[in-house]
Image 1 (cartoon, helix red, strand yellow):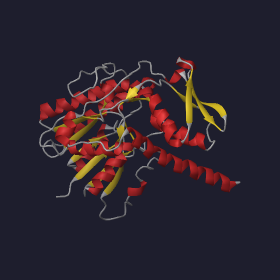
Image 2: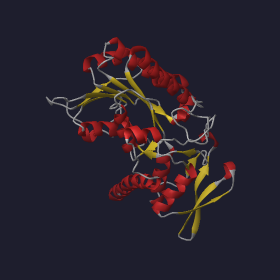
Image 3: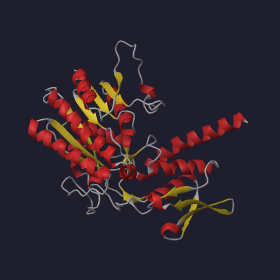
Image 4: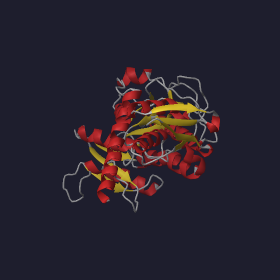
Amino acid sequence: MKKTALIFGITGQDGSYLAEFLLKKNYTVHGVKRRSSSINTGRIDHIYQEPYLKKRTFVLHYGDITDSLLVTRLVNQIKPDEIYNLAAQSHVAVSFESPEYTANADALGALRILEAIRFNKLEKKTKYYQAGTSELYGRNEKTPQNENTSFHPASPYGVAKLYAHWITINYKEAYNMFACNGILFNHESPRRGETFVTQKIVQAMCKIKYDKQKILYLGNLYSKRDWGHAKEFIQAQWKILQQKKPDDFIIATGKSYSVKEFINEACKQIGFKIKWKGKGLKEVGILVRNNKEEIIIRIEKRYFRPNEVHFLKGKNFKAVRNLKFKPKYSFKSLIKDMLISDLKIARSDMILKKNDK
């Protein structure tokens, strides 16, 4: 029987990959996107289906997770078999600047969807997936973190996600819902947002290669994260909802690397020779090319978080055992995939500018 899925956050990195994956699984996919005067559907344009088509399997709806009436109406209208809540204000640094909105979207957004399921009496039909984060662990640096590790979020984003995590468990227990949390550690891809550190690094190296950028400013080079590929992580999200009983899972690679190690590997793959000098805020990354040295990386104080999280690494034993989750992308192949994509864009931009002359 053909299933129907509703994805909140469909225009994001995870939402776009998940939509592709579900369509290949013969789902009908509904997605919620925010109204914007600028185009915000670049990640899903290749699977878009025009509204005039009679038998669409991919349908977009305007909306926002902060609008409870809209959420309730959509859930009632679609009556999905599965709901994936991937919508969020997901930038940790921004959450310090906009804590109220972060709480409204990330914490109360989850509540609105769960309450919509309950209000529409879909507890027995609709399965719910809540996108969690390794930022739940925050300052608890006992590693590797597993499903039983205590939470200690260190940002408004982490705190908001903690509410979403526990309200999901609460609705599962109180109303016998099939509601699950996926605690995903950092996952990247060519579709990662430009303000996230991995994409900032990859894009900058590609632009520097073609002399389109001179310096990249970064914050803490020594933060360590467990980085995987979003394309693989979204498959785990789907598998979580295919279990016989609702449960929560950590999705991670089990390996952790620093921001500086990410830079070094990206430089190596792109053919850059980089060396480091200085300490603290005066540390710089120096590119050696054409027998010349040029500073391409500087440390900027404003990119440090008010409450730093230094080390996160997940233990994915439960996901490996129950979901058969086995990441195929390594740290190096993840970076390679991102570089290949951004190098194509950088080359295209260079060719277009040459043609304009």
